[in-house]
Length: 192
Length: 313
Image (tube, rainbow over all chains, first blue to last red; front, side, top):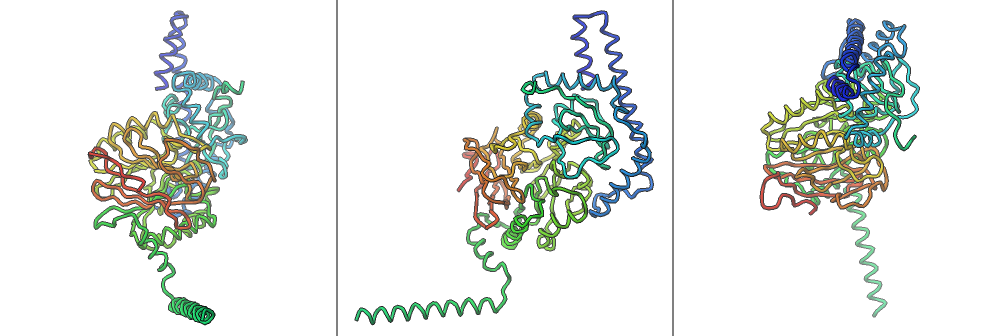
């Protein structure tokens, strides 16, 4: 879907600037590929971090779930001790993501996406840090389905979450912030 | 003469009082089950027919506070279980608020619902925005390690969704599941409501635009949600019944706005719902923490003429 939107937006743009059409498509595709490679690299690292841990089965106790979550988070932290914001959302990736999100909000779905974000217990004022846990006392802002369908697909262990206007890449099972993209969502019209 | 009559009446009054007190003392000294009186009341006010081989369950939402009100509602649920004999409970999300330590699971789930759990009642949870996604592995939530899943009880199929993260994979899964289901009743439940007249959150419009076409296409009968800390029975939308029950632990007092879309609303205390499905009929009764009946009725399975619903009796 994301690739499709990128392709369409580039084709639309192509009517104005035919000379720059194909390079832009290729460039964006390459950027998305780079994003997918980075998330896949994370998944590989995560598998290593997971090895040796007792992965919760379908009928686990609360204590074994907690133990697994903490151990997994700790192992990932150790293996990504040098991780910094922007390791996955690099500036070029961030630019493409911002464009994708802006497209969603400008589209016919934008109004209902905004309404969903407002109604789904928005989370504000969290000081996000890569490799740190998402605060347990804070609710998880639900991510609107339209927005998810417009962004590149993620491996099953990762999720897109929203905090204020930031797009957060979360490891759900480890409850860990993998990376985040500041100012990812366009400023609401009434806030300008 | 008049004075004499008065004396006699007073004597009779005191005699009756003493006799009643004696009865009360005697009853108490025999140590009957604590719920005897309430089960009698429940049975007297019950709106469920308790037909043999019917599917009976309870519904709670936004329950996991660990507060006294949650415990009191759980007691009322147990009293109803003794009468209704429901065998499982649907959880509409926000099952454990404010932490994911094992003690949170004890205080906010295992302890309040211990009588139900001890009686063999199974809970089937969906995830809310206050839940740790790892709750899907918790054995007493029966999610099988999945954020979204389905299960079936006789001719009733339940589709449990994770509305906090409704990605394309989940939508495809749901469509496949609904398409393949031949159940008489298809019930979907998840945390965020598609319709609501509560003031705090309101309906999730984006979720609605994605899910409602599927519900209509594949004949979903009933949709249950939480998130709003009130009870709402909404006017059927495109022939589908919608309920919100998000006040089984949390409560947002007086949060409902007047609306033609709400058939019955309740925002003054906690509540739960008991449901019985028998053939083409769904009987429901919504009960408050103090045992008051908030709402009840019969929903007819869609497509059955002449009139579909007799709710709100």
